[in-house]
Length: 158
Image 1 (cartoon, rainbow, N blue to C red):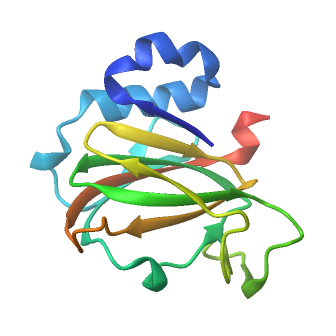
Image 2 (cartoon, helix red, strand yellow; image 1 turned 180 degrees about the vertical axis):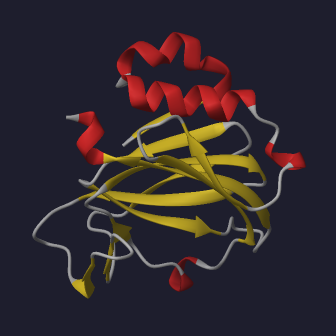
Image 3 (spheres, rainbow, N blue to C red; image 1 turned 45 degrees about the horizontal axis):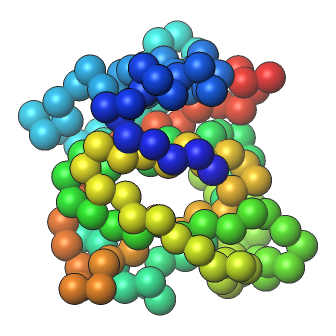
């Protein structure tokens, strides 16, 4: 997992694959507060931005997940949430086997369990080896979040 803030992408982009840098520039150049929820293609390589608005939830109601076919960029536009994280390992207990159609596998818990706070303008780049638990409410309870999840096909990163 790599984390950053959108206002520093010019300085940080050298560390990223060009497809990730392209997605970050897309995020920086759009005002998602004026756009409808939905999917927006980025470029010509199958990269898609999914704009969504939702209420965060208690941690117990958020499932750890991983993906095999896509890298996620989770970018918070408005609101705040915790994003749980751990590396993929044999210690994790799978609760829902891999669903190829949805490109997701779910786990019982994160081992070890760590988290970062995502706030407006911050993002996390999550690779297939990054198990993550999005949408976690802060200590003061659930709150509204506007977030863009960019899906980048792993095969274009090779």
